[in-house]
Length: 408
Ligand code: SAH
Image 1 (cartoon, rainbow, N blue to C red):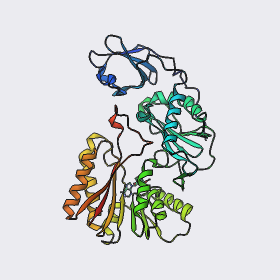
Image 2 (cartoon, protein in one colour):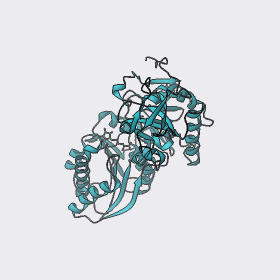
Image 3 (tube, rainbow, N blue to C red):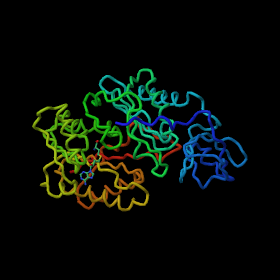
Image 4 (cartoon, helix red, strand yellow):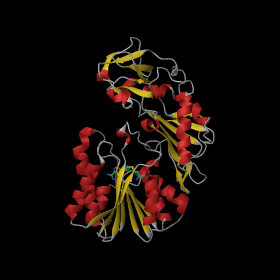
């Protein structure tokens, strides 16, 4: 495997490339600590500015608003620190340390839990950066050129976090960086290398495939919801739709489900689910995997076969323009489940589409329920876990929503 090119680092701390001045009265959102500067708000750019540079942003009078990463596009600056014109030298280390301390205080760093999100972009005041921890390996994704240029410094800081025991940093930004920036990022280890890929979540083991898997290799964001599902699983016949790594299935098995069927259209995902079931419940006849389309599976299955169904599809609306079609998708999917689920059942249903609000999702699910004629009650309203925090100045950070429903 080719090594990451370390030569195109740029000084990112204290190496400010100048000042971006905003148009008159365009400072409002920054004063409210929203971390994005849109290109339309900018009056003047310094002449030698390049994508990924650290810049200072001022209002039209020259008052300093903050310092952040510049990039070409609609979001022109992502603010790293408000009210300053340079970043301290230990900026990344300190931000990462406070993110780690938060995870420790949330009780996520334990011998039986070494799998959590360490950095959730804006939610950890590090816009453009995602870091997930799997045992001794950190998987890091840059979404902005500025974070790309800072990657080696960030990786090195990760290995210095006291108590985090991070030995390997895998950089996975080939598909997350803006394509036009042409940064030539290659997925590879920046520090260390492969040294095992099994992580532990709430005492359950998972093979994490950061090399070929989706996102950083695992959907850490469903951890608390999987734990809740475990409590509902006893004595139930479970159907885990869109299973990916089989996270919900493994928890359902531990919770004492009578049977667990996992469905994903991807054969790779089906194989990952099989591997994770084998890791925790080798040769347990209660589990079966189906590499099939979810809608086809729901259509073909007999009614009343399952009394606990999980619907955790990929984002049906990836941007605002897709909201209408996305809602139709959620309505149809949930309608199928309401049509087929056994009376006295539990339905866990999710949307991870950022563009679809909590209310819109509820409306889609409730419309599906009303059409089915079933009597439905809400038992729990679910969200993303605390290691995916939402900065109140950046409500766009909220994306995961779910409902646990009781269907008569
Ligand atoms: N529930 C999973 C995450 C789901 S990610 C977890 O807890 O980790 C969404 C999954 O849906 C992906 O694995 C993808 O392969 C699968 N998928 C996408 N379209 C599908 C379809 N039409 N039918 C079945 N699975 C599908």
